[in-house]
Image (cartoon, rainbow, N blue to C red; front, side, top):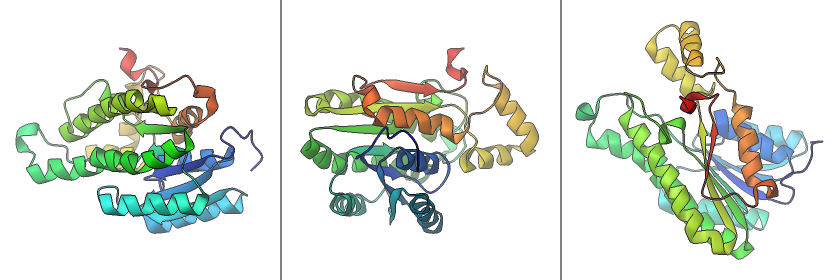
Length: 258
């Protein structure tokens, strides 16, 4: 892995790391010198990614983790710290898009299911990583929010609510843990070509037409790719951003500039 070692010596946990943005973040962090713990419920894809990273000379292992299960989160985070000697970077990426219905048609179960992953999952992973980060007296937590943590649209109400919550959770923890030299920031992607976005577009009709239409929502005229986000995460994980905490890194092709 011959690249500049921007996070050399770091130990990163990436949740939802098997596919899409999480996959790109895991590869990017490993390429730049971090040991990477990939966690997900998609075991085959996660194991393959860890193997691919090791084959390229990086250091990665996979753990099965349902972020909605606090006991499992605690166990896995402690195992990762034991395996790699510490935890210094947490990328809270695991999330689902949930149901696309107007608010008055959403069941409590549908709402709670999304929140258990997108909000509780971020809380549990942060809560159980923090003691390890405080032990280091240094760390970076990067929470994946969305453009829809900043603005909204007339669809997927639980998703939008969850991403707004993640944005404010990031700011609060940034303030609480700043004395420990732990930085907490949120990343706000526009539409990025991932399995989640592909499924969303497919559900709306023709995929090529949909891709063009969604691309045109961004002033730059196209969707982003996963590395656009992974480079932002790498910056926030590295010492290049040592004076950056409690803020939003918006990577959206101009979507929210309207």
